[in-house]
Image 1 (cartoon, rainbow, N blue to C red):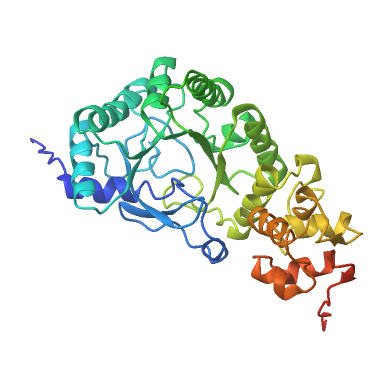
Image 2: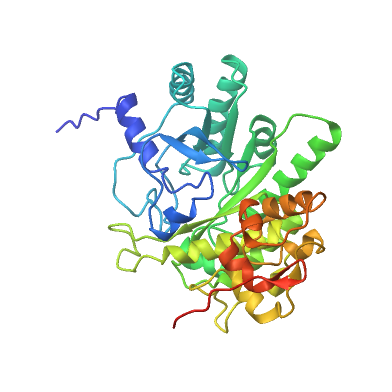
Length: 385
């Protein structure tokens, strides 16, 4: 009996390869979405939140959903039966160009399953990006995933062509990775490739050459018993050693027919606390040792980590009119932007009430117990229970 296999058309490939790219994080989700447990929407156009505010429309897609690895959490796992398909580099580049010409997207986020090996996969992804840059003259935003185990020359070419590169560490260390993705190796194949990318980016900046501007990673949270302490220890190390721009936290959710199909989904509030802790490390001047872990190495769920820290350590209120920026950033409800606005405002006026602080972007319900305004404590609404 002859079996005839029909290659999916472009629209079918888009449907398959964009849907399975949904769990690749392209921006920190907003707090409301995290609290409600809303995953990234499916579809090949994703509105990613930008660091400075606003959104950008990314074409988020896989080069292929075929994969040699049997990762227990992943749609593309070779252990899960599903329809496999692949974009040829020319197909994908042409599709993206048509979307940009129609003004439907502003940039590309390209990831991939890994088959038959790391270098072959990376070469196909790079062929797609090279066509966009060299043949089509595309100069806009490209975020390119690095493939664990890929050769140095391919990592270097990715850094040269993309605006942002990333590699999903998935777990905080080899022990956890072995439970989550038993075929993968942490130290050389994953962390080591991020070291290469970081070094290449720094060298390019020193020499004034075009190169990726930032490096990011992603973790799966809640699948194999890892603690918040383990995750954030690795995140702090990545910030310090690699110049990591951002860590993303993808909350585990079970996938039908996967090895972890019967495991419950993780609480999305956990991801929120991890993001808030990462902001404390990256933007607020806190150290990993100051984070408020419990005996199990977990962060509190019922309050922000900064609130928990303040309850344990911030016994003397901060005078808003005199405190330096680093002290302002220790106050719950005051972030980098509102701290800068406070410093700018007090050059011309004395800040003496909460209404003024609220106008400067301070979350006054969180900040009020910890501040002095012109030498006076702010009035605090007492709890009824």
